[in-house]
Structures are given as C-alpha cells and as structure tokens.
Length: 212
Image (cartoon, rainbow, N blue to C red):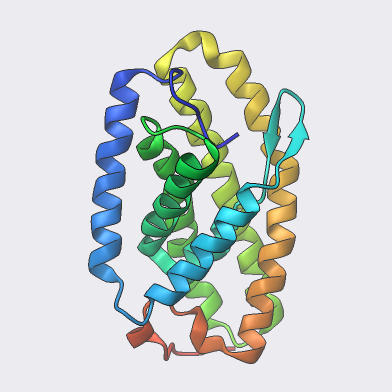
C-alpha cells in the first residue's frame, strides 16, 4: 500500500517527505517544457486510474503504479505527475491523506526518477525494441522495489513497532513488480518500434544517438 493514510507517520518523516517532494516538484516544473505537459498529464491520468483498481494481497492491497514507464518518459517530471494524481485521489476518493501527500509522492516518484535515470539512456540508445523492452522491465522492477523499500522505511522511521508490518507489506510488492515489468516491457517496446523519439523525457532531446 503506497498510499499511507493520515495519523500513522511521525512528524519528522512527514516534514522530510514534504520538503524533498517540494524540491522534486520544483525541479520537475523547471525541467519540463510546454510540449512535455500533455505527456505528463496522460501519465498522471493513467497512474490515477490504475491506482483505483486495488488487488488484495495479504494484509494490504496492491495496484499497478506504471512508475517504470513514468520515469523513462518523464524523468524528474514524474514528481509533478505523481503529486497531481495523488492529490486528486485524496480529494475525490479519500485515498491516502493530505498530511502524507508529500511522503507518499516521494515514495512513489523518487524510485521512478532513479529508474528512469539508470535505464532511460539505455532504452533510448539501443536500436532493438526487444532490448528496450528488457531495460523497461528492469526499470519497472527497480521502481516498484524502491517504492516498497521507501514505504517500509517510512513506517520504520516513524515507529520501530511497525517493522513486522513493513516487512510483510514489502513482500506484497513482489507480484506487483512482475506485473509492472510485463506492462512496462510491452509499452516501451511498442513505442520503440513505432515512435522511438517519444521515449525522450524532454521534447528538445528527442534525437538520441542510436547504437546497435
């Protein structure tokens, strides 16, 4: 459950999450040009819709995050997209919480940005759609694992008594990582075949050097 509700986390964790998220959103808004905004809006909508379809998994529930694809296509713009979607979910459906909006955004967006920074250049530099799909699957697994780790860390830092629950919750992300890998591989492989320039997170950088 990446959407931690109000009343669980400690004040230092909430404040730290809000501060880091504010910096990430500021960086996202500064780095995105106006041609990247529609892409960010579409991915935010996909994340918003996907997050509303939860599958019970042990004591928690999981849902598709699409953060691997988001990190590759948006880069740091993932912070703005995730924040927008999470805010709408809180206001419209009461999913998550207002006080945890910052830390929830950080837990989801930061792994996406890291995964995109690592595997995005590899995806854009290869000429093979199959290889790009493999890199995208790795990005998705890394993004999901990062979110699971950050959620568990947020709970542990707030109260060590949450440690057993955090461990169990982290394990529920394993099947999600496999599902995310399959979805991300399919999406990125398709884009690589039909419009490889669309894989650049910034419109002005849409002509990467392609190597075999």
